[in-house]
Length: 75
Image (tube, rainbow, N blue to C red; front, side, top):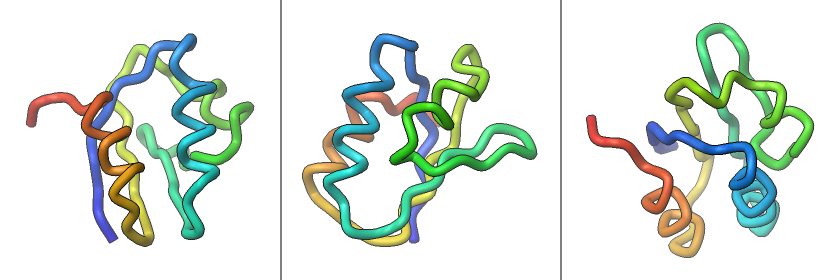
């Protein structure tokens, strides 16, 4: 299991979810007390995208790791 801190703009959500759907393991996105399935475009859009989000991956995929690096924030 790995955790990553990212920020997404609304126009980036579709591409992010598309990449998440290619993975054969669970991926969650959390903000405060809310946790949603990263493979759900409606769930991700329901989060406060002005805030830092925490992505929890329950597996590993090199392609998705590259996607996460593209949205990563320092810290």
